[in-house]
Length: 94
Image (tube, rainbow, N blue to C red; front, top):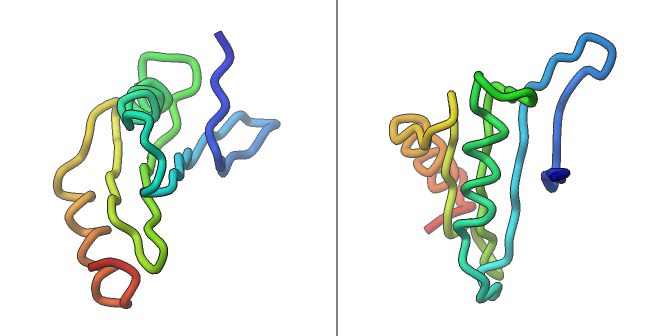
């Protein structure tokens, strides 16, 4: 099955998959598990894609309501907390 992340940062020729981002609106009533599962797979070092970092963002009308970071196929609590705090510090999250 094909997987299409919302945003990717990579070098095609090498291949060097650096970053995969999934973005969704806070008003989206579909469960976020599909996007989260996709990022776990995209960042799993044992699978073909093996992006170094995956980011899951939920966007409200004026701020980011969810910011999760996936590394090595799992949610990285430390990096997620860092990103969340940085977004708060610059006024992009509550």
